[in-house]
Image (tube, rainbow, N blue to C red; front, side, top):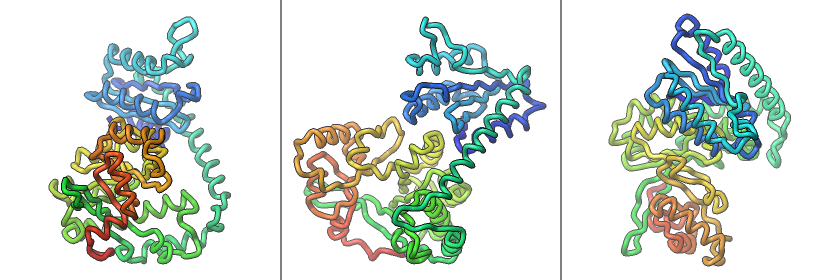
Length: 404
């Protein structure tokens, strides 16, 4: 069952319009989760809810729509009444402590959801979907206006001319000149290190010089997201036509969720053999995954079925303990080395981190930014066996960075 979180309101309204003449067997269930109490409106709960719906309706034809305001709509064909009741009961039970699910006297709250059998209620459902679409568009417009007015701290103001210059630079730059390799290594029984795969990444500093030196690409997250998405497309295009050169050994690629759902990645995937796919790790920033959990889960499921492995990147020692690899369905997690953490290995923070690493799986954690021997020793003391950083570069003697 497909999950839509980007422009979900418009997608639902469009689908309803297209199916007007064939609507008799279809049902829409709208769960009014935007009315939940604040503590229940989080990505973790949404993740569980979406997985619950997907699992329950795994044999059914339909889609899940996650609205901007937090509401969740389920469109399903030939939904058996018993299965409909089970779906509503299980989602209601998930939020059983919220008054939206049950009234104070324990009765089912009718405000929890609305069921639209489209044979009888298509007009009403279409009207409500259009209303949600309009509301979402207004909300997005307000957000865009606020973002346009924001001045990046330390990065200076960038306007239309600067953005146009960056766009031209992205099209004209030889981005492969900024492509680097860095090995991820495993420690062996005799204490030596063995290369497991190479991370292929674009140097942001080099790209800044190539695109627009006056603008700090890291100072504004919207600009950075736009640039990285464009870079993802360019890198995939080059790898697609030169995979024998760049993908001769196992690698990891940094990718946004949006990129993984794009036609660019689909075209890239189509030219790769299954043998090449299983040797590729896709690194997804943790902030990107949690920004749109439904999109992440759909992208994750898709690429894993295609043979790729998924790594959650960008985890600090503070955030790592709150992210469950197994629940996220990821294959690997990347933890950033923090020199401040090594002071006392017996501290409560380090004991908590060590427990989280064991829960994740010692061989599933990569300690990155290991620029010194003490970083590796710290990781070993916590049970980590995969490492990345400049210290490992000197031990492995990698080929010169850039075009390999």
